[in-house]
Image 1 (cartoon, rainbow, N blue to C red):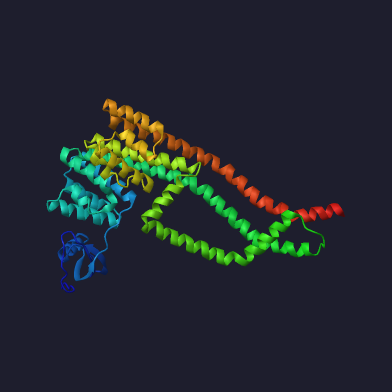
Image 2 (cartoon, rainbow, N blue to C red; image 1 turned 120 degrees about the horizontal axis):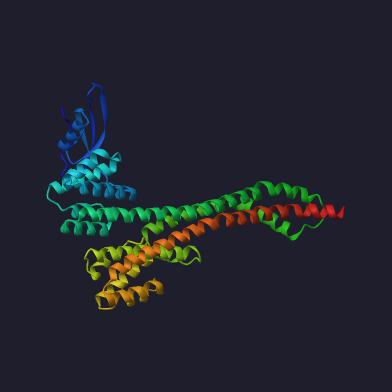
Length: 408
């Protein structure tokens, strides 16, 4: 017997959560929750797992599937390989659904296969999942129209893998010094709160004026001991509010993205990384035949930086008014002459797509070199910082003892 709650109005492609109870192939009782488009689809999914359901209850609409960046890259790489092997699109999706172990990705693949079987274009089905992005869907649409879907998916997978590798290198290069700095601050704070006060009791018995560095350290220790809880709460609340503000406020996000481009070492690195993504995206779109004026609408958030997103919008307006691309880019102030000059030449020669891809490749190499330099210089720099913090504290604490010994 199949049980269900009151019928729910079903929109095309809408998915629901179903709790179920049934018997497996060995006669054991099992239960669980699955996501499907209806009772019949839920029963079919359980049948594939060799489960005979005697109770299925509709628990209402399921939350939208959220894909990780790595899921999209895996999806692109696997689908490109299956299409290269000659499988039709729906058959390739079915194979991927049966071989993947991540439930969210399997759910999305099933939904895409259903949409295509109902007559939707692949790119239109992908557009229901914002994680793919406008550029991904546009390139898939071009691949569908030209019959070159497999090569375009392979190209997208290559680009995403390169971008992920760069992000991982940058994260590693920044997280190591940040971790060392945080540990150094924690050690210094612990010494100031729990160790320095014991020295103060010793110094009070000397009966002589203390050196200036020692008095400064003792004053800081006393202030930290009294203010550590309010300061910690204030920092935690500020961090939480800043995170919420960055997610909800476009103005705050733009100001933050502008700020992180300003530091002397990290700023130029992040700027070059954004230029790399921007050049690669525009070059790829132009190479596939997308008109220049239309390409900017697809590149709305390709750099993950609000400053460059605004620059893309400004460039789009200027290009639509008939301005040359290099001049429009120069007006934003986001692109250095080393990028603007080759683009101006490429506009004259009609090789803009090739030049943009070449610039992206060159900037990728330079970003990798900068990241390697940053990683190599971070370790000695953090050792120096740690030495100054802890060493300066130790010297300040032992200076009165040394002076007392000289007097004796």
